[in-house]
Length: 230
Image (cartoon, rainbow, N blue to C red; front, side, top):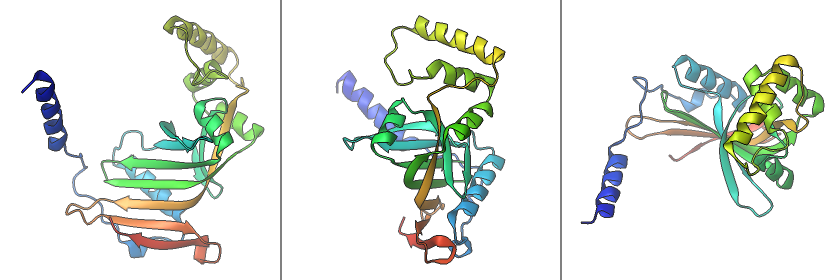
């Protein structure tokens, strides 16, 4: 067997031997207790993930696709979840911002390993508006403000050199300290208005529980709730 084959087999063995770390016993999710609408359950699950010690429970995978239909994904932070939808921010000139302009639909995925839970949220995405976008940026940390200033109009563009990045961030940090209310013209707060939300609870014997909400204005709470095979 060649060295390349040995390495490939060792890699496959590594994958087969990996186990998902849970925080003790997994929670029991009785689907009959699920509320009529997904937002209360989502807020409770995120709070419980945070209380379990899950690292970065507010981080999520954002999937978008442009006019060509080719999907792209990245990890971003949830800024809020309310009756309007799930909120996140980015530069409208970034790849995800451009794709949302071309195709205003997206999907979010949360994965909380310690309680063995996942949530998937899909729907149409819209801009919250200039005032809300500016307020969102003001509410972030000085480091986040500096990153937004440095990346304004340049995020996802080709970088000439690492030194160029360092210079841009030094200038941005200096400005953020001098102007804590500074705005980045391209920074945009987006809101995903969900039409589908799925909750997934792992179970030790693989009898995983999947509850899907589909928007249905005539149903109680405006949603239809159904179970899915795992």
